[in-house]
Amino acid sequence: MSLEEAVKFVAGAYGVILAALLVGYAVAARRVASLTRELKGLREAAERRLERDRDAVR
Amino acid sequence: MDASVWRRLLSAPALLAEAAVLLLGGFLLAFWYAPTDASSMGFSQKIFYFHTPIAECALVAYAVAFVAGVLYLRQQDAKYDRLGLAAVRLGLVFSLLVMGTGMIWGKAAWGTWWAWEPRLTTFLIACVLYAAYFVVRSTVEDEDRRATFAAVYAIIAFVDVPITFFATRYLPEGLHPVVFTSSGTGMAGSMLVAFLVSMAGMTLLLAGLIRLDVHVQELRLELEEFKRSLERGPL
Image 1 (tube, rainbow over the protein chains, first blue to last red):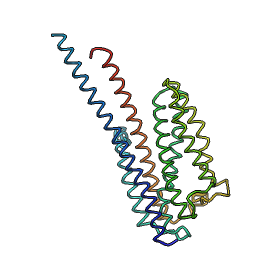
Image 2 (tube, each protein chain N blue to C red):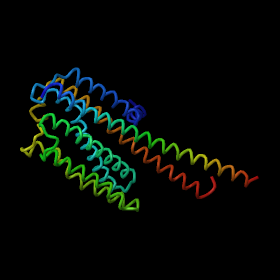
Image 3 (cartoon, rainbow over the protein chains, first blue to last red):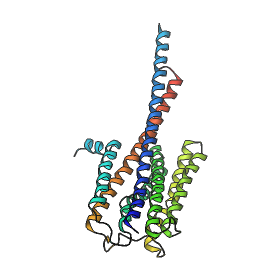
Image 4 (cartoon, rainbow over the protein chains, first blue to last red):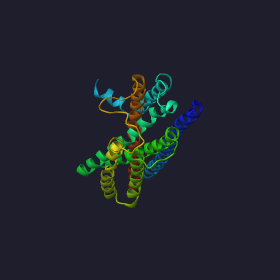
């Protein structure tokens, strides 16, 4: 096999690894974003609840 | 070193950062330090420096799932179920990656994308077995029963792992060469250095990703618990 041909295969294999890393990063980023969204929703719900409880005490 | 330093070094972000440094080092060593293979593989042998560590890490991940399964069955602690789930998930990702890079290397070295030889076949079986792990999990609703089923399944599926590992050594009709033997590695010292650096980097990457996965699962559980307590009563 010529060097030019071998380079294409090696680049392909390392390209697959790089693509997997990027996809992994994107998946992790999505999971973190979803957790952050849920946390934000919970914080808002907790604040609303706190406000309601304060009103009830008053 | 005291325990807090070790804890910091072994946290998910630290492990991932250490892995990134080592993998970059391994990549540079593979291409600029290790010589081009003198055999018929030639330049395509460069795939070895990442392909083999990924394969080893896939098998290590399945071994972690096996140990987590055994520990879950002994102690009934949900943290081992989470560890097992993370290990299988990452083992499967690493397996698919090794199949992808292996097919490309196979085409370059043997002239074919796929051959039904022992290592490839047993690795494919491992992929199918561990993909079915998620089917098993999805069929059981009760958390405790699901964890027990998953632990038992991970233990049974692990039977394929030693077969995959030793396939090239004891089944002679394989195409995969045996690089590491009791008499030596059969490769130049500089190649071995590049390989070991990549191997260390990939192992740390696996460890960091497993820790991250477990951490995300725990965060999700905490959030769910918090949400339930918020719905239940006053703060």
